[in-house]
Amino acid sequence: MIKRQSLLNWCDETLQVFQFKDYAPNGLQVEGRDEISKIVTSVTASQAAIDFAVAQGADMLLVHHGMFWKSEPVTITGWKRQRIATLLAHQINMVGYHLPLDAHPVLGNNAQLAAKLGWQFERCFGEQNLLNIGNLPENQQNVAQLVAQLETVLQRKAVVAGSVQGSLKRVAWCTGGAQGYFQAAIDAGADVFVTGEISEAQYHLANETGVVFISAGHHATERYGIQALSNAIVAEFGVETLFFDENNPA
Picture 1 (cartoon, rainbow, N blue to C red):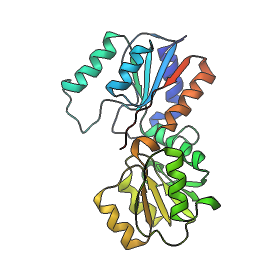
Picture 2 (cartoon, rainbow, N blue to C red):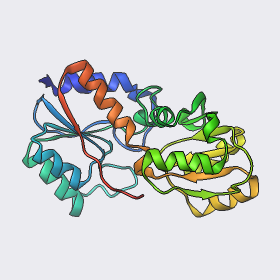
Picture 3 (cartoon, rainbow, N blue to C red):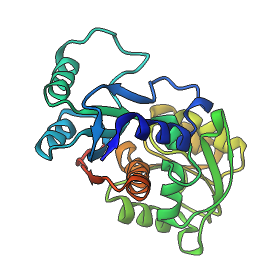
Picture 4 (cartoon, rainbow, N blue to C red):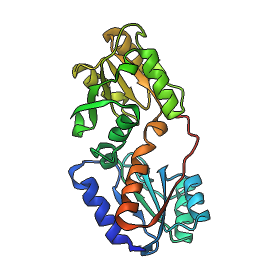
């Protein structure tokens, strides 16, 4: 068992939260009990994840996607009221780490995705250094091979835009909803850009620039950072953790 604030301090320091200009609060979002002995982790603080935390008797729900975003209304109504009411009724802390958990060089979503796929990291670039670029392994150097590996690892159907012909070597990636960074990946010299979502514009950019765009699932590409953070917490504090996954196709 550990005090909530000690755990939060360690997470803040480990993830270097103060280096990021985020559009969601990082750290404690809903306050529960002061002492933590069991943590449920999940990609998103959905009602299903909260209900699972309740069923497990958890003291904390630790997520990548919390409930408060700058673009949303500030009123606590509807689905948001229900989620918060459930957390408060069971004194469950809800803690979220967004961009800091994308970018951490070891525990982050980008680093963990590369490790799962065997990509050779070279450098970070782009806005707040959230994009990564490096080299593909020999068994992923055409579109069919890369897509097959992504779909095997992530268990999600990928969406591909651009030419499926020719060889690939340089991969740029950013997990989640990073389709808006495609031009930065093109400018950085990538042969292929992998992220979680695709919008209408990326289809045309891929066709017109010759750089392949692969959407592999927002949820699917961001399952691994929160699990890596959970494992690090277990190693540091010895508390019990459980991961709750959802079959989210987006």
